[in-house]
Length: 292
Length: 285
Image 1: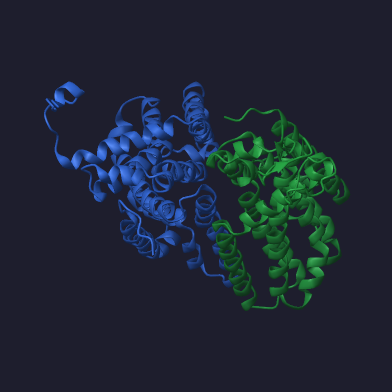
Image 2 (image 1 turned 120 degrees about the horizontal axis):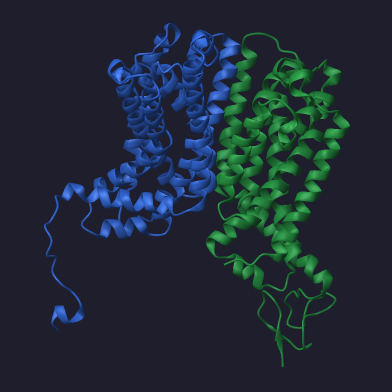
C-alpha cells in the first residue's frame, strides 16, 4: 500500500536541532497547566501581593510629587517599597506560599500524571531521550515559577523606574535587574528539581502535597522551634525557602551581617538538595516499568 | 423477572431487593430496605477506612509525626519545660497550625475527589445505596482515620513531654476532637465540590488561615483555627494560660471557650449537611 494514500507524508519543513526537543515538552506542559481553572485561581492569589506592591509604589510616587515636603516622611512610612534590592527580594520571598501551592498542583499534573497514566512511556517511545524529557519538564516548572516570582518583580522594577523623573533609576540600579533574574533563576532551578524528584517518587496528589508542605511549612516551623530552644540561628537552615532567599540576597548584593554567617550553610544545603533531587530522578525515567 | 442483588450479582427470587436486609436465598447479602442500606453504608465506610489507612499518606503522616517527636525531644533537651510552655510552643505553634489540618486534609480530601479522579465514583453512584448514605459513609471513614492520627499524634507528643503529658492530653483532647470534626467536614465538602479538592484544602489551611489569622479585626473568625485556639485558651486555663503577645485580647480578640466549642460543633454540622445536600444534587461527569 502506498503510504501517501493512507495520509502519511514526509516532513517538508526544515528540521530543527535535536536538543530543541525539550521545548515542545515544556510548551505542552505549560499549556496543560494553564488550561485548568485552578491555575488562574492560584495566579490570582499570587497577584494579590503584586497588586499591593504595585499600588504602594504608585502611592509613594504620587505623594512625593504632590507633597515634596513630605518626601522623607513618605519614604519612612512606605519603607517596604524603597526601590532598592531588598524591596524586590522581599516581594519574591513573599510569593513563596502561592508558588508552593501552584507547584503542588503542577507537580501532579505535569509529572505525577505522566508516571501514573503512561505519558512517560509515550514520550520515551518517540525519539526523545530521557534527558530531553527531564529538561522539558524542568523548563515547564521553571516557567511557572517565573510567572509568580520573576515576571511580577520585573514589572515592579519597571514601574518604579518609570514613575521617577528620568531613566536614571534603571542606569543606577542594574544590579537589581541582575538580582531579580538571578534569584528567579535560582528559584526555578531549585524548585523544579525538587518538585520533579518528589512528584516522580510519590505520583499522587495527596502524598505529594503533604511532603511539599512538609518541606516548606513544617520544617521551617521545626527550625524556628529548635532555634528558640537552642538559641542557635543555624537551625534556621532547615527552611529551604529561606536558604534560597539568602542566596537571592547575595544576587542582589543585599546580604546583611547575620545572613552572611548562614549563607555558606545555605549554599551547601541548596546544592545538596539539587544534587540529591537530580540523582534520584534520573533512574525513575524509564519507558517501561520494571516489576520485581 | 428475576432481579439481581447488589454486589453479589446473584439472582434473587423474591422479585426485588429484600426489604429486611436479611440474606437472600442465594446466600449473598442484600442491600435493599433501610437496614440493608445501613449495612451497605457500614461496609463502604469500613472499606474506605482501610483503603485510606493503607495509602501512602499514612507513611508520610508517620514521618511527620516522627519529625515532630524528634522536634519535641530536642526542645526538651536544654532545660525542664512546664506544661504551659508545651501548650504554647508545641501545641499552638506546631500542632494546631500545621499537623492538625494536614492530618485531616490527607484523609478527608480524597474521599469523593479520588473516586471521581479514578473513575470509580460512577460505580458507587450506580449502587442502590442512597447518595446521602454514601456521603456519610465516606465522611465517617475520613473522620475515623483523621481522629486516629490527630488524637494519636497529640497523645504521642504529650507523652514525650514527660510526666505531665497525660494530664495535658486530658485537657486538650476534647478541643482536638471538635477541631478534627470541623476540618474533616470542611475538607469533605471540598472533596464533594472540587475535583482538585486537595489543592483547595491546602490553600485554605496554609494560605487563608495564616492570612486571616494575622490581620486585625473579626475577619479571622472565618477560620477554624481561630475557634480551635480560643478553645485551647479556655481548656489550658488551669495551666495558667492567657492570650498574650500576638494572641493578646486586644489584637486577637478571642471569644469564650464555650462559644468557640459551640461554633465548632455548629460549623461541623452545617458543613456536613451542606456536603450531603451538594453530593445528593450534583451531577458528576
